[in-house]
Image 1 (cartoon, rainbow, N blue to C red):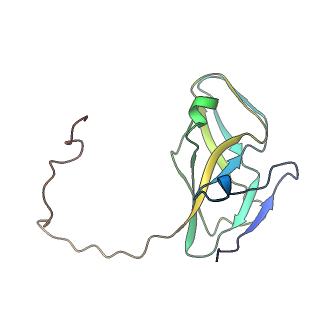
Image 2 (cartoon, helix red, strand yellow):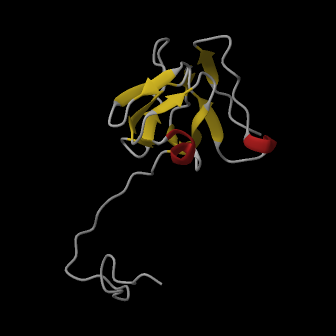
Length: 145
């Protein structure tokens, strides 16, 4: 059985959230306004929703796989995190983007996606001089192929 999450839509013409094909782990978010950007411009694209995420959970917002191809924008923080305390009546979600070419994002265009994740458990770091795992050669050492 799923979690119930209260959602507020900021525009009644915005398409309601649904699972992709009714089964995906990710849910598409849409632009809540028409946006015209010139190459190099930054914009906070409003997503037209606010939610009350349960305590102990957070939302991860990332671009769709086709976002760059379709719109030529890059999410400037690479992944947005919405914690459960960002839940006020005016706490609309946004996607910060920078345009890599002149572009138009239309109202209701699917621009990004999100999923609800359980918060990381509390971690205690035990300092040591050596780790027991096999040494793989460090970051970037596995080559290109």
